Length: 256
Image 1 (cartoon, one colour):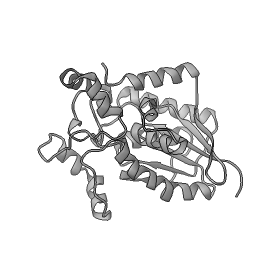
Image 2: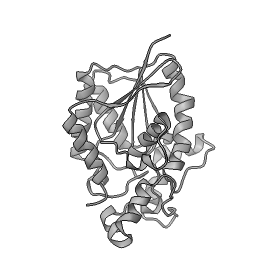
Image 3: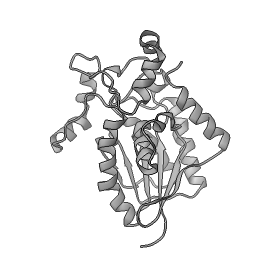
């Protein structure tokens, strides 16, 4: 098959924990009311552009599944095949999980919190068994099930660097072969997962990736040639003002 290959990516809508400005990571927070509306907005943008898909990829986390379900139902593809993987989970924020970002900024300084949030390779403190949300994460049924079927070691904390080390092999080995076979692919995931893909696909430097923000609920499109070279990069759908507002909001999270 020849011709350009289209991949659509979207960040899930706002979660309840994001609404409260809390580090979420692997904690299974659900969508907020705003997040539900953002997912519907994402679905409407895809419907207006007549996008149809052959397969979707997402994480194990409910907020991503809720977003994907709203999208597939709204575009008339409620039975779209979905592959889920822990490799598309949000980055693990370690011991920061469950803490308010603004309160941490008051305690440790805004610059330190930004380093934890956006630096390429600085790890947050490790989550140990005494952490308040340790059991909530590691006793999650999907995590438990995957622990029995995978020999890989799950993280206790991650930076963008470590997140990329699981996301990119999954992209190369599981998603790309289906794109090459001509499948129309939708990826609904998390901010750091999508930033991992953007860094890899666009060759963004370690420093520059820190300033790239992904708005929730606004889909964006990559176009590839037959050899999976990027032809068109990160084209957001929808109104320019709304896109700019979404990017600005994503950048501001953690400072209020």
